[in-house]
Amino acid sequence: MKRLILAAFILTAAAVLGIPAAVNRLGPARIEKAGTVVHMYSHAEGKIINLSVEDYVIGVVAAEMPAEFPDEALKAQAVAARTYIMRRLTAGGVANPVHPGADVCDDHRHYQAWISGEEMKKRWGAIGFYRYYFKIARSVYSTRHQVMTHAGQLIDPVYHSSCGGLGTVSAGEVWKFDIPYLKGVPCPYCADPEPVREVFFTLAEFKKAAGEDISALPASAGGKGFFEVIERTSGGQPKTVRIGSKILPAATAREMLGLRSARFDLTLDGERVKATTTGYGHGVGMCQYGAKGMALKGKNYQEILKHYYTGIEIHSMEN
Image (cartoon, rainbow, N blue to C red; front, side, top):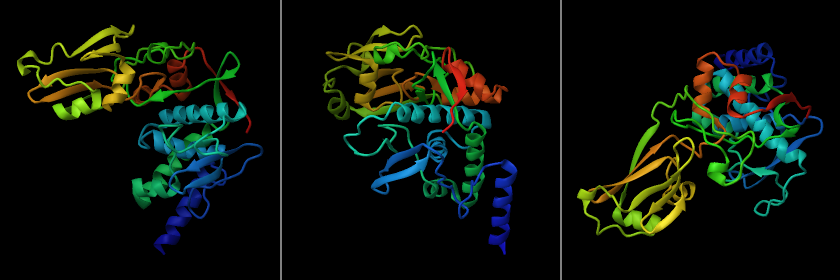
């Protein structure tokens, strides 16, 4: 009886929310829509699976943004995720040497992260699954077909978790090429509850990661001499740093050390190296915790997107 009541509740909720065919055996549907199918390599299944664009976007939003975020932030994430995949699909696709025949995969290090309905259930539990799945699906379908363009072209809508309230940075200050819609902007409402983090390396771990032996440095020096910010971006983020004898882009140093952000500082703390980071991610494009903060301040998803992506337009693009 309880299962029947739950089933009736879910089906009724789908009708009220206006999500077309949102439930298939009480789970996310894979609805093939006219024209566009996403061929995604699933690492969990070890094969390519075919998804409708909206089903793909639901999985991306679930993977890339906390489901408890406000609806307007989730809508902004949905439009960004849809723009990303439509830009790739309408460009005719790019040969995938790792997964031939796939448009994308579900690994965030290569493309956008994506999770299945089964993974959602594992993360949120049975009751949480229906609560959050419908919340995300509502955000996706309420922005259905909507994408971002600049000068008539689909944009590359990069995003990151948190700028730590320091503001985003321009693409050219991280990746050495400027993009007109990826300019640094203030982010006064970043809602990251813990923007500053500390991690520690033993001297051996640091040597292995950085290739620099700093064991001879006296702890009383606080590490002075082994780390220096050579150049900063216009927003104050490290752009070029020196670690020991190496001069590196901050983004490269971040990857080398496995840090949360390129906004970091290194100090010697006894027999360890302390890395202090602010924010999480590369700092370009939409700040997800900033989007949350803007939504909590009453901004809608169009205002959020137009804040983080300079000079863009939001259009309906039929699948």
